[in-house]
Amino acid sequence: MKDVVLSIRGLKVYYKTRRGLVKAVDNVDLDVYEGEILGLVGESGCGKTTLGLSIMRLLPSNAIIAGGQILFKGKDILKIPDEEMRMIRGKDISMIFQDPMTSLDPLMKIGDHVIETYLSHMPVKVDEAKGKTMELLEKLGIEKERVDDYPHQFSGGMRQRVVIATAIALHPAVIIADEPTTALDVVTQAQILQTLRRLRDELGSSVILITHNLGIVAQISDRVAVMYAGKIVEVGTVKEIFMDPLHPYTKGLINAVPKVSPEGGELSSIPGSPPDLINPPSGCRFHPRCPYAKEICSREEPSKKIIDGRIVYCHAL
Image 1 (cartoon, rainbow, N blue to C red):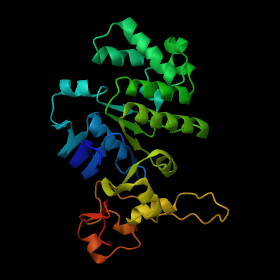
Image 2 (image 1 turned 90 degrees about the horizontal axis):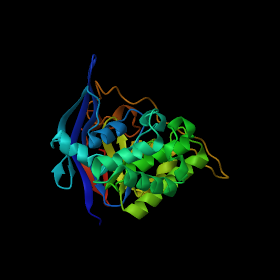
Image 3 (image 1 turned 180 degrees about the vertical axis):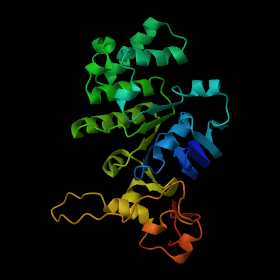
Image 4 (image 1 turned 120 degrees about the vertical axis):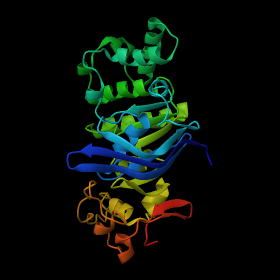
């Protein structure tokens, strides 16, 4: 078993709104192992991005961390001073954001985004930082001569490569990739995923891949964590999750994936909608949509169970 590089325990992140507190992440436990790609999946609005932003400590101003720990190298990064977190962010833990056009400054040359990362964390001069940037961009398939071009001069896939370059420049231990292939065509998606896998193999970094696309997770993840309504409901290897899902929600997600086969087959869907996280259901949050729900499911929150090494939260098991 590899070492745990990042450990989340009892994390609670709420958003203050006029209607009340949105319990976006509610008592989440999750471990990330060294050198793995961990797929974090679930429907939109289940708390995946909030979890990623919590690790980076980049939550919006109306967010409250109501409890829990995020342990990195033995330190709770939720409690360290801002300046110390600023040095960790980008160097030890980095993030590839969802939309490269909004995460890149349109008034900055693409090379300057990466150069700034080097200058902020390393004792290097501008010329040396620029040389390193050009080298890195070439590794990611961008001609070094384009270092002085602006984001609008690149395609979506090329802009995403720039964002990836900024995220990996300092060989971080953990890379959080939040929907890194959104709005990209399938060929570019495949190239970006191949790049992430190669970076994991070359740098030994751990990757948290946040997505609702189970096809992407099946392609490159080692383990999968399934999230529903602010809670983790199941964690297992990619083979376990796809071949033998245990939690009813995981089963619903897998059954809703279109299957390309000679037999075809009907698509199934999960009835209902995710709950309002201002007033989530009591007990198991999935019970109003669950075909296996029992009376206890509406009363008591399921406790953590370990089944053949897999983590699952369900009364029916």
